[in-house]
Length: 205
Image 1 (spheres, rainbow, N blue to C red):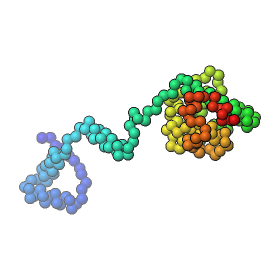
Image 2: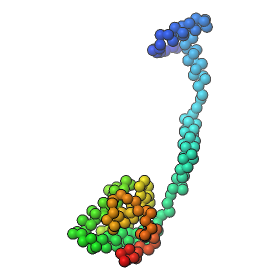
Image 3: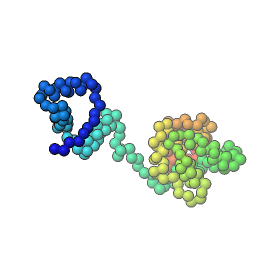
Image 4: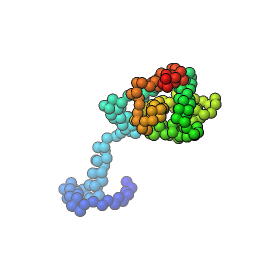
């Protein structure tokens, strides 16, 4: 058998023990060490990549079950209908027009900056969200926010409905970043989607 040299640094005391064991076994040092390696390798469990992945997957599933995390399927939210999306968008427009007049902003830009600052303070909100909301508010016949865009906002840790909360805080001149999901006096997001701008008159009455 062709041999290849293997240089290994070990503790001197361990080397002495290996030499002593080799003498006792009647083998050469090289033969004894080689046999030790062979025996150690043969005793290692043979485990395929697939079985390792399966084991990891089972462990993760166990952790998920212990934490009582909902399955991905259960986390999915029902999409909004086209009418609900339109109602939601028209409600925001109607509130914006009311506040623009009520607070006496000098320009639409000033009103927008004040409004959006009550929404973009939540961690799930980003520049794309601001762009899409601004587009849906100010551009005629622009596409309203989609189901995916609205449902994505539910992933926030502080507030799952930052647009509704932002509107409430803006109207009331409240501090930014305070979740208003528990506010029962203001129409819920579902009510807004079902009835749209007709709710606005009741808010300001």
